[in-house]
Figure 1 (cartoon, rainbow, N blue to C red):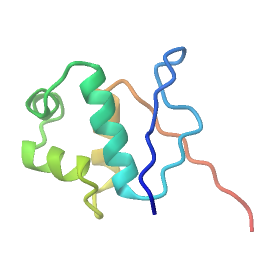
Figure 2 (figure 1 turned 180 degrees about the vertical axis):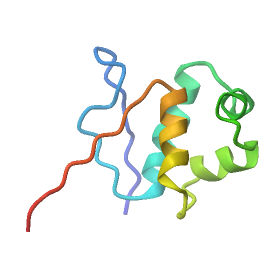
Figure 3 (figure 1 turned 90 degrees about the vertical axis):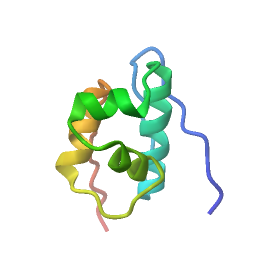
Length: 88
């Protein structure tokens, strides 16, 4: 699957309608937002109390990351996550 560029909507400071279908999409979005805020992985590590190694793994799309860790990172980046459940 070709990698698509995820863009943040400056009006809302979020990426509305960004569909995350794999952890590498989430990682790419987290990395992009971190950089937009002028933060390093070390900065994000200090804010979340996660190791820089874990931050790097998440940004590279580590497959198995607990949801509470993703939510803590998103909170540190002033982001929210919404879940949309589609019917069959």
